[in-house]
Length: 266
Image (cartoon, rainbow, N blue to C red; front, side, top):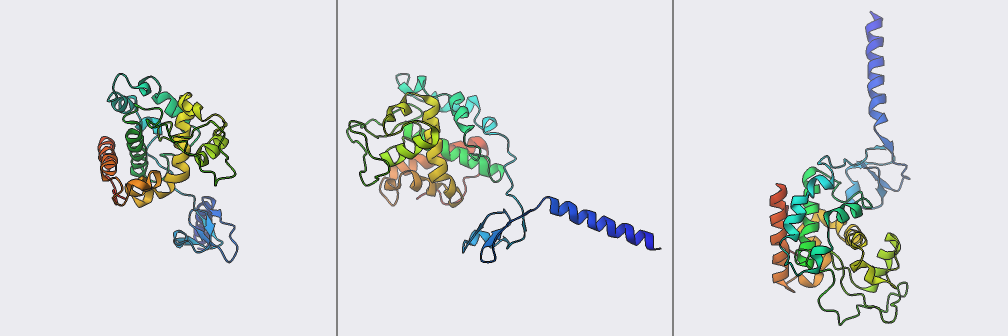
């Protein structure tokens, strides 16, 4: 009669070992809260749902397919086809260049649920569409300002160079060109013009800005992404622009068959 009990015990031990094999030890010290995702920190409410110095699970990645599956040729063409024939962006921006740039940002559109992924891609292209007027503009129309902030000593402005908006998200200011170039691999301070000459670098600057300034506020709603990109428009600063961004976002979410989420306005 003892043999069945031994078998049951062995089965239980095997199940426990299998469960633990999918876990990882957080490696937290006693004063740090360790989340179920394996991250650790102090006093962050996002870590409450988890463990402390125990086994934690990695975050679930999106199972909604690749970015290329969602940003189809039809989706991209439907945007750029709305730009006038005379627009310089018509012969500059391509889906292939966007996908090449995305390869450097593996977390873009690939975190959370399938709906989360779709909303992030819809939000990104909503802002890109607004900023470039459906991929019409490569550079900002108003080029009189240099967009040089001399308080950023780490990224000093180069005499004669202007850091006005360029690319899909119209990256601007020396404090963005400098670090973007450093991360991507070009001299953003001495050669900001490359953002409007090399389409892959152009998309990379947009994704760089997005992942460093916008990606982390996605869970706060589309309105938070507007504030992260152009806070001047918020709080009544430019209601027309905000409404346009929301309108385009609504359109793209409908195309992806996903809900808009909360907090659309900033």
